[in-house]
Length: 180
Image 1 (tube, rainbow, N blue to C red):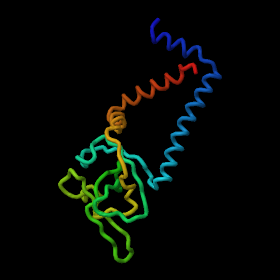
Image 2 (cartoon, rainbow, N blue to C red):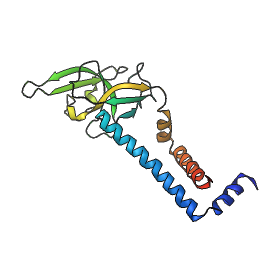
Image 3 (tube, rainbow, N blue to C red):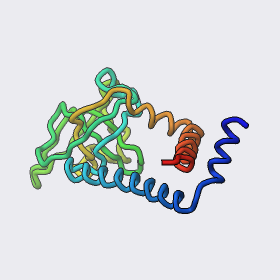
Image 4 (cartoon, rainbow, N blue to C red):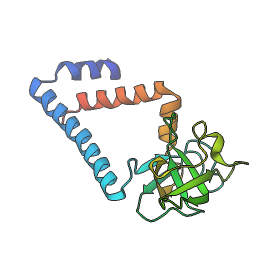
């Protein structure tokens, strides 16, 4: 009958109680992942404690596909630090180095100017129209560590969604047909 026939027979033989148990197990896995993510957010002080480098603008330091670990502390940001920031009107965060820091005399707040290590000019063209500096609320966190190449899984699934659907389908089929 082959592998497909065995899989179909396995799905037909599933009892309601077994299906319910597997659904609860899957729910617990998803819930655990969300709890871990929220705990990382609390510990690091960053809204996104882990990000994937999506471009080559920070080479040779960080390459496309590297995963960065972020931390957001109360210490003022200094030139030379690598930060991840969001720009108004863009959904994807950007990873670049701080090249200039500007402290406002009236409030003492620090604004920063960034640049990709592999780019020729600063990031003012990436900022919202008329914006010359990044403010504190734009900064998501500072890079404190990285894992090389591990983020390629995310990049591949984003650029080729069919792979994501095949993987989700295969995992779902595996959960449904498992007898444990």
